Image: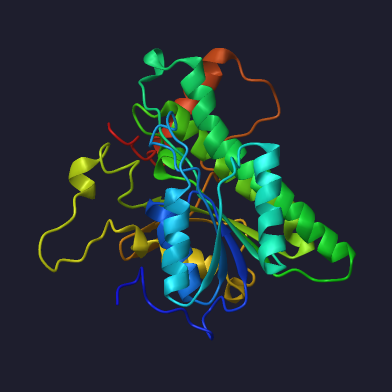
Length: 312
């Protein structure tokens, strides 16, 4: 029995927790939903069923199929087909969890699509569409979930709530031909940091993940890297490799971990360390432009080189 169909565990890491996973009909989201269910969670499987560029669809099929897999393995799940980048879709997503299972403990924001173009060829519609699905599609479910958890806190019930947001290496380093996607994924990191700081008082932990895995969004863009290996070799790009960290972050066991960004790929987990002050010089008077240039070059000579943008 493989990881996608193994029986659910009544004593699993997430036993009794109610988990929402957006974009869960395929790829990483599907892997996360199945992994949560295998650890005993009740899962709301959200997916619009659109094409990889978001231009065609929608279809309830992908979400329903994942729900069927979870139920066949003895778990509990429901499908939700709302557009989580709208207020109505995001609020109904939270309502779906509460009405179906009576609670909400974990939100995994994962939905997205690509419309890749070099910057000078990118039109405004494709810019806005990608920011909408990735960035607004993270913000709105988080907003409505957080409102629920805040209300619980005010009613004297302490949430043990978890949010896992999906960023990307493109958001941390940039990626050629993906300026819209890179900007959205960088925004998700900032959203995560602020949400972690604001929501901790309500018992909510918020973290972000930059995964590398084979999905509809990556298998063509990075075809060689994402290819399935032959034989019994470890499939480092299988999306199921990323899900264990997501499940742990979404569980009560991750107590005290918040405001962090992780990378996960194959058997590798990395804690990312973001912007920190590097070489600095200070004086008690204003610099002239020439002086500022000279001292800046001296500082750059002492600084670590930045990571390369993907595709360079």
